[in-house]
Length: 483
Image (cartoon, rainbow, N blue to C red):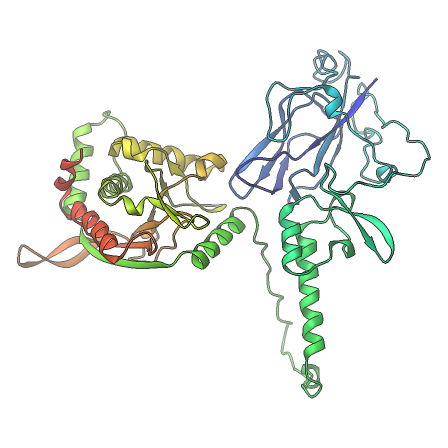
């Protein structure tokens, strides 16, 4: 007998609470194997293919491409244990796994006994349009249809407070009913704006309340408050007719702040609100650095390995500077009121992609030479362009290098990548008039900007760090002391 199992969006780690469906990899009626990827989702960190821990026939999918689901919301249902050797792609492997378990553990999914994963049919879901009653007629004829077990016509039991689905009971106008909320982010947002979740009707599957529902309620509450407080004598804009010539003005475009763009917005806002930052900058003559790079690449020969990039050299200079000024390789523990100096340098670098700005991290950069750092930067940049960076490759940085000179600009005031303590910004390297050896000459000049957390150090330390970086740029031989 087939067992219908519900696969929910697992916890993808790194504190992520929701994900957007980018692309479904299976259709209703398809036979899937254990640990086969079934959907591609985009989180605030990266795009991830999510594998299903069950093998069987897909009987329903929840959520369209482009929709956002909270962690714990149903993704799809799979009928396990009734496929046979004649099923599509079937040697009967899926049918031989009635216990439905994969050996790989997803966060939030274990490999325990099948009883722990058996789907519970809730009375309020019987008869719902999203319920996986049958396989559509478009499915192959060899795939049998599956239906959930009939539910007795008994009065449904009340949903307990704080059950495994994140629902809680509440009383609205004397009536008892569930509050369908899974995401803790949604609950916190509602509390901050005094929104009663019991008064909302969710737009998600089975009435699940999403963040968009809470945002809409916040807007309506603000409009109602503004209407109540408007003075009676305030003139109504409609009384002054406006004459439009030609076509009507187009409506303003609204772009949701979600995914990578939403994560960047949250992190930058948090950085500016929590970190008392300051910026200092200096112009440096990069002529000798460019000459040293050319000599390094020429010495490697046509097949002597990858070329050393300017960014790799600047990254190596940063690791040497952080060894001299470890105050800038730290973070602030606000709860304990302590500055935490970190033992190793995990160097982040800003990379612009089609999905937005991301900051991949070169692990243990302090143990690498310029060639090794350059190779790792190239590898991570390629993963960033294809959207295949994992959350672990985008977190854990201790210092960030931002080369905005690639956009043709000379300078900027970098925003610290919270919770780090500093970021070095690099402008474009371009010919400029410069006094060299007492004479005016045309040299390759670059502007370096350092934004630092004023809690971890004072201007003397920040200035010393930036001056050392500039000295290494102007005289690369200074680095020989640390190599």
